[in-house]
Amino acid sequence: MKAIKEKHSLAMRWCHWVNFPILTIMIWSGMLIYWGNDEYSFTLFGHTFFRFFPEWFYSYLKIPHRLAEGMAFHFLFMWFFTLNGVFYILYTIISGDWRELVPKKNSFKEAWQVLLHDLHIRKMAPPQKKYNAAQRIAYSAIIVMGLGSLVTGLAIYKPVQFYYLTWLCGGYHFARILHFALTLGYVFFFVIHIVQVVLAGWNNFRSVISGFEVVNETPIPAIEKTNNDEQSK
Image (cartoon, rainbow, N blue to C red; front, side, top):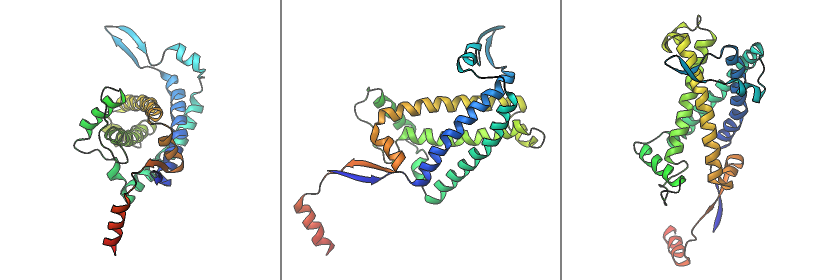
């Protein structure tokens, strides 16, 4: 027997879908800024094996040399990114949804089981409620990453005014490295997230849009139902 069950609140869905275009613009504008001084590379014994990013990468995506435009977009949308993140954190705390997000002591063990199940190595997935163990770890990590992007971003944006943040991040150059690494982390998370959405199927994706999902419920036998009704009287 199929039934419609509420899964995601309006606030959660709002923050989720608003954050997607904001983060996309942040990454795009960040690339415009980074290309102004793309100094990071994988170098060993004086030989550069890979640059972040190769020239063909910029040519293929047609990323222009517009440093000022990148900074303007980046410094504008970082406030929307921050406000959306603050609103989401406050909502999870006030509503109590943080209990569904924070990893438990056995979450890392169960996350490995989830991975084996997704790879079709393990037949049965570990029991879950609203989120499985892997989702708990991933969604909690993305909140920490967002906070890290805010701190390192401010340390880069105003290294004199926020000198204490710059010092906390290990200096201006290390703060820039951390900010860059977090950006790569967002891209990696986004790719994994899309794969997980495809594997989860349409019902799961629909719940993030409408807030409801279709579940299969086992009908209660007539005799058991009668007994429950009598007991309630």
